[in-house]
Image (cartoon, rainbow, N blue to C red; front, side, top):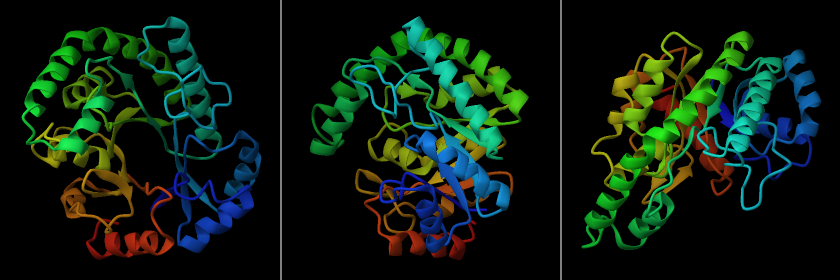
Length: 305
């Protein structure tokens, strides 16, 4: 069953009931609860799930919304599972376990995980901004990219070790709760995991409650910024371990558009979808309702859902 992420329409609704009505009006009967989902709506959401009014396919870590954040942090990366700060790493584990437990109560199947960062110089954010401004044919592109790759390669092992330490704990909780942890490919080059790190994670937790979560926009941005050659490089190695897919389109260097409203060829995904893979439209509020409804029609037309 196709879900829509509450990243699309949560901000325009001030109660669970309004969000529920809005979801149905858009043509969905299933939701992914994102990182901004308020804790005070959980009890109402539980009642709606119990009544069969809505299904919850997945939660996006951290969920419900984190209320206490370190200075300079946002709900999207409040605590990192890969952090070198042991206190932060432990809090990341604590709040991830809480998300897993909430997912279990709501009858969800998976929790989408942002695995962390590798601190690089230049940073992935700075480099992405450079690419958007000057493109991949700029004279400085190759130089900056090589510097960032070298910085990331030199430091990645220690951040991966921190991540493994965290996942060792979280996987146990997920297995008890019968929830799959979906390790999502990320938007910036410095973020964990890259393709090789995804392979390392899946190998380490083979047979455990952990799989790969594919994000179409993020992967396509890696292609358009010259970091990988083909979109399927993110899919082919992990085709037997895909838990779910965030479906959103790309226009130039901008993602999180409704499927069918940009230039990404979603037909690429067809061979990797099966009934066990959770499909979620993750359009952001910049998309219109008509574009989102059009996205459902488009995905149906090409046989993806």
